[in-house]
Length: 352
Image 1 (tube, rainbow, N blue to C red):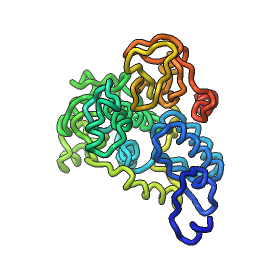
Image 2 (image 1 turned 60 degrees about the vertical axis):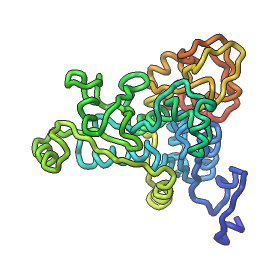
Image 3 (image 1 turned 180 degrees about the vertical axis):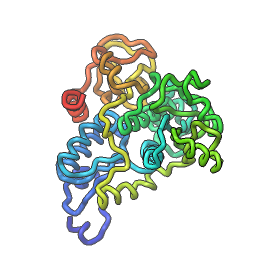
């Protein structure tokens, strides 16, 4: 407190310092570790501090219950501007504010998709990009994209059209044609969905339409296309460089950039990255044993599929699991002492 009150910057390995110091109004968690994120968020909320989750890995699993607790405590729980879910949410809110119907929202995939990627296979690329190999492996194997779309689903009520999404390849010009209904010549079974696209990274998008003929005429005049669907596209996201905007809005306006207001609409469920033997221990997101795929929450619950954010190095395999098999609760022994496990259990009971 003393040094902060003197206007000094303080660096510490003690995470409790950020959540308990009186002068601090908001806490940003940028660890990317689900268990750490759950603990930091809970501590911040308990100490009446706004929590900015630059930890989509935790938000995708227990965001709804943390959001509920934050509301009860009178503080803001929010994802961040600059991350793809937050950037997409800004497009979504913009379109809704103008009276458009939003049909599809999503993001570009930044890396080639390889569900077998491990820290070893991406090591050289990670070194060139000065990234942790585990982080890059989580990008390449698709888990990070699925988690981001899960957070976006939980904030909007939009669902994945199919398990894992379509992940089409497209440029912006063809996007409204490809991401349209099957009867319209596209790939979708329904509208109101989240998806990712190969070929438009690092951007985010929203496909919109309107029932008003006059607005269609105006959109064509404005070179937005011939309709009936149009794409709003933001060709960049500036990650943590944009986080100060969220901090300011949380502290000053008491507003969230993105929050799981719709409950647990989707989950990122765990899939075996290789054959797993009974007695083995699993690892983390971006590791050697599992990757994540988005699915509707109701289906994940029906099939008792495990959210990947609940899996860590203390998770034990109870019976042999084949490569590519979706992991259910009866296949593994989770660490029930983890805060994130307890929060998810509470969330399933209270919110569903």
